[in-house]
Length: 217
Ligand code: TYD
Image (cartoon, rainbow, N blue to C red; front, side):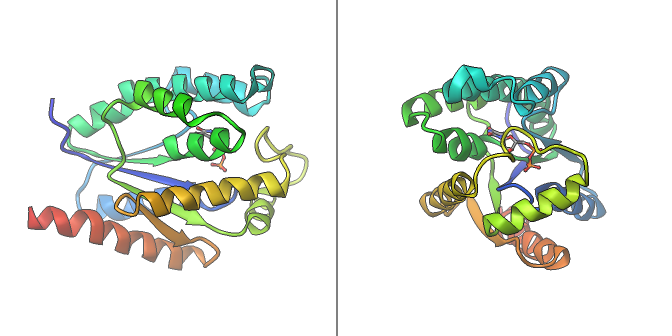
């Protein structure tokens, strides 16, 4: 079946505001009459949410970075099959808070080799690739402070949030490297600005990359 919808992913480090921006973009698109599915990874289906709980609790750590990469890919395959591909086939918009670039940046940054990552990517997503990826970029310390504030007191950081600033910075650099390799797909958005400014940048990117080119088709 042909895929006529639009697939947008939001990527970036901890506390970069991806879920807020995905929600705001969805509202704006709905005002134009579009049908929009907002989803997230790991997760997005009942089974994938179970894998999410397992991974974020740290119980998957014993598998090592490769094992975690395989589990993220298993969750992704289910998410693509049951939610993303069907919505795109119906011509809808799909906005996902994280997708395969997170595996490249996180598990790649943790030492999983490129060949395994691309094989998993191929298995999990097939031809379902984002048309546009918004990389919400900001300094690691600022993102971690936001994430801590969002969590509130008494709530413990998850398995990935707990790691060192150095490790998070490696992931930030990995995301930026993907953006420079694939400028036709990724747009870097300065996420240290205020929420409204970031939302305006996101909207301009969507207009420019997806809405204008659609009218021209
Ligand atoms: P989440 O609470 O969604 O983090 P955030 O709010 O920062 O998006 O938790 C997802 C965590 O899982 C996050 O730390 C990144 C990590 N992750 C990976 O390591 N690999 C992946 O493929 C995905 C999708 C997420």
